[in-house]
Figure 1 (tube, rainbow, N blue to C red):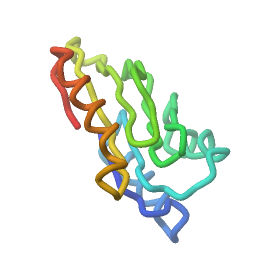
Figure 2: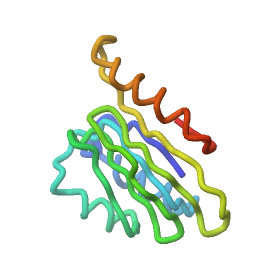
Figure 3: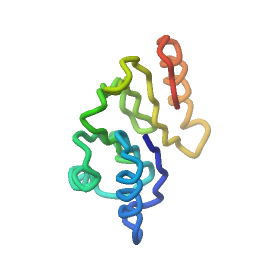
Figure 4: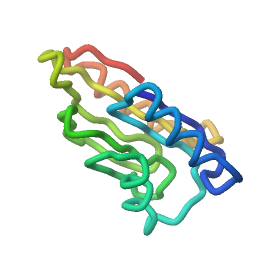
Amino acid sequence: MICWNARSINTFGALERLINLSRIHNLSMIAILELFANLSQLDSYRIQMLMNNGHSNPNSKILLFWSSEVNCSILESDQQHITCEVSHDECSAKFQMNYVYAKCKDHLRRPLWDNMLKWSETGYPWCI
């Protein structure tokens, strides 16, 4: 699993580096933050990274990809985060992942913190 702040996936070699990391480390889940790309390219990125599934948050600031080895249920997806329940074929235990791309201004982050507080009470192991 990798979460990468790409700061534009379209810069020279960025996507190629991510594809290479995915192959070297046999990644089964990849999140890309701040990619500055068109959502219409979601399937293209998914195919290039050899992933079976993909999801974008509503403003396309977070893209999440996962392979068939991963069971991923999107629990919530908004402009600042994607929250999902994850399990892997090699480990039956479920855990919760929150992929966050927060707003810069503190008053705009308030809904994010309210959501994180809500998700912290689920009882699952949790990773942000």
